[in-house]
Image 1 (cartoon, helix red, strand yellow):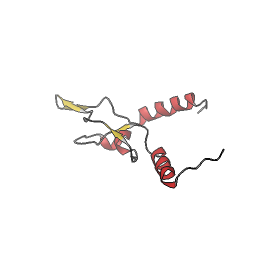
Image 2 (cartoon, helix red, strand yellow):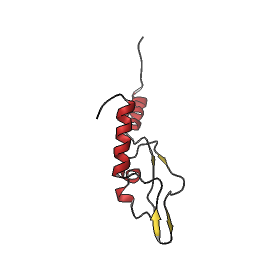
Image 3 (spheres, one colour):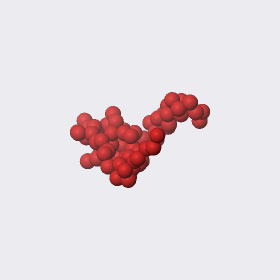
Length: 88
């Protein structure tokens, strides 16, 4: 069977495959955005973003339950290796 894949669809498919498969954050007024993967990850053409910024300030302290720092990235990579059946 021959598969005809129009060039435009090919480009869209492979461009979207390189985007981050996460919900990104726009980082508006976020003091920790530069250390957060949800802000620094490369966005794709069809990237999803939080509707509302997930971080909040209470009692002069900023917190964000969606923060994705180095520790969260390490955990994600370990789980990804387990799911794919690879050992790290």
